[in-house]
Amino acid sequence: MTDYDLPHEAPIAGTELETMLGSLERQRAIFAWKCGGLDSAGLQKSHPPSTMTLGGLLKHLALCEDEYFTNRLLGAEPVAPWDAVDWEADPEWEWHSAADDTAEQLYALWNAAADRSRVAVAGVLADGGLDHLAQYKNGRGESPTLRRLLIDMIEEYARHAGHADLIRETVDGLTGEEPPR
Image (cartoon, one colour):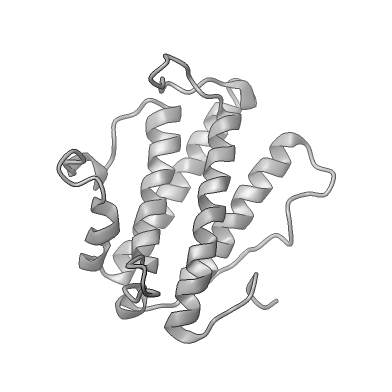
């Protein structure tokens, strides 16, 4: 998690698809930078009064990647470790179970989930584009488009990048909007 291929910004005059994918990749890269290079102790530090940690954020965003693009978009069953969790008994499992994982495990989990998402999105783009309907149906029987899922994931990263900013500064003083070039 130390290679930050960070686009300066989403394309200025790109297509809708280029803009959305560019924005999502930029948010992923910013998040990777904010979490990168830390050991397990650094990933478990919080910014009181919150108990949120960078390790918890890594695991939560790995879950979001798999939930949005593997489960909802493709309709696939949950992959490990999500398939073994009793979510009814412990709906916050990813947040607190991250304390039991090593830094290497957390980085690998997040990277693998983001890679699966990229593959899923590329496959759907080749078969229907942004208007492709997800396999998932909400409580009203509606299926979101890939467009909606991409926007939701951009929002998820943007929200948590702000949390990561505050937590990382607490860990070692790292600040800034993007890695030094």
